[in-house]
View (cartoon, rainbow, N blue to C red):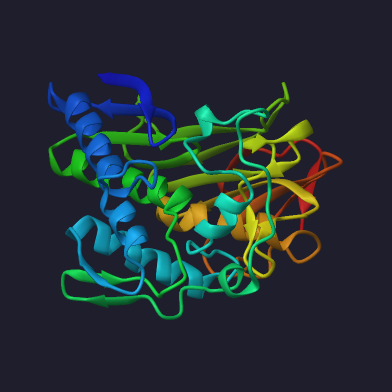
Length: 311
C-alpha cells in the first residue's frame, strides 16, 4: 500500500511517497527534510550554511550532513568542469535573489548590480574540509540551491528504505529520487513537463535512481522576468543559454541536479558533452521548443519525447 504527503520545504513543493512502509514513515521523512533545511538554508540565519557565509576564511564546525553537502558540491564542481559552482552566492544576491523566492516580486527585489570581478569569478578550488570543520575561501559565499534538494532527496529515500519501506520516492522541487517498488508494484513512472506548457515532454521509467530538471522558465524575477537564478560562473551573471530546460537521469538526485544544470548552462550544440558516455542520460529543450536527447536516454523513456530526436 502506498501513502503520500505533500508540503512546502526548501523553498519548493515537496512530495513524498512510501510503499509498504512503517506507519510513521511520512512524518519521519518530513521531519528529516525540515531538519536538513534548518542546516542548509541560506535564508535561515541560524543554519550552518548561513554561519559559513558569515565567516568566510574561518574554519567552522559543521554537522556530518553539512560536511557531506560541501564535499558533494566540490565533487560536482570538478565533474562539471566548473559550470556548476555553488560559490556564486554573491552573484545571486547581486542579481536580486536576496531572499526566499516566494518573497521576491518585481517591486521588492533588489535591483541588479554589477558584481566585482574578484567576487564573481571565485570558485570552489580553495574550500577546505578538515575533520568536522569547513572553511570557505575569503570573498565567497555558498549557495546549496539545487544540489541541497537533490542530496536531501537521496538521504531521505535511503533512510526510508533502511526503515523497511518496500519503495520510496522523494521529489523536492523537481529533484526526484526513487528506490524499490512503485505504487502499482512495478517501476516508478515520472512525467517530465516544462513549466507553462500543457503538453508532457516525456515519461521516464526507473526502479532505482533519480531524475532532475533544471529550467530558466521558473524562478524569474525583475521587470518582465528578465532575471533568473541560473548563474554563469564564468561571468557571474544570469546565463544567456539558448536552452529552456534540461532533464537528467542518474544514479543519485544530487548528481542528476548538477548535470541538469550543467547541460542547461552549456547550451546547444555542446549541451551533452559532459554527460555523453559517462553514465547520466539527458534531454534538453531549446527556446523554440525543440527537444534533443542523448542516445542512452531512450532506455528510460516510456515514449519518445514530443518534438525530439537523439543527439
